[in-house]
Image 1: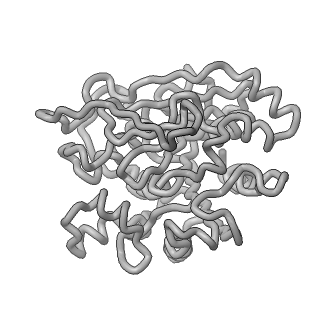
Image 2: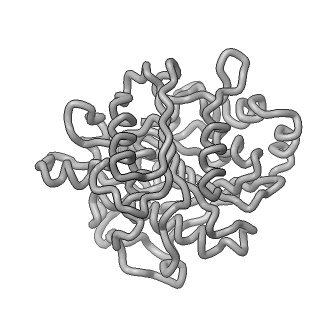
Length: 319
């Protein structure tokens, strides 16, 4: 599922309002969002498919850029530049329950909030399993791996440190981010150019109200159905449960959820944190009392603590 309306529908205005005056000025001075495809040609595994990019409004009366993509033929990055860069970058992976990708074209409020903090932010529009790609449930992972490699390969162009690239994911995007972090070395596609020689491993991972496990009873039914289809054999459930088989080089990982999330059970975050601790991966968990399926940038007129908490954790680990 997607980030709640509290954090995205208000867009850049909400992000700016959550920041001090200096950060608001930086956000206002930021260049327009750039968009670029992540593959030099057609994405892998699409032979014979007739997938077309399709956009729908997330709510009839919502802002023009409050959109989602139920079909993605051209995986893209939105590049949200920092007005005052600090050399760090973030790959932002939105949610949508693997049924759609909830990201606009103009930069989300959360992306602009982190850009105002000095980070170059790259929002990922990724492909969906239901469109029939040859890689099936690994098609989104192909795009996430390619995006990370492309960002790292072009670090000099963007003015960022290739060692200071984090990945943050929300809801089903949290599942994809967790898989990117734990399966960065998994070869999901054949290299297509020099960018694919670079590592797909993020320096730090942030998982926010994430879908994690495909196992009952905590599995998010909608994401599980979209990802696995009708084939939910135990071995497939295990393979696509993000808490399973964490490698020793799993990046330091920050996990956050709201206790009153009625869409994705907080048990997902608890399960992931337990797995991270068992694997001795540097990790931090925050369960907030309220927030529902999403963590807002502001709450009751005050800046919500989660961006600063993530930034502090990530800063300790190289971002």
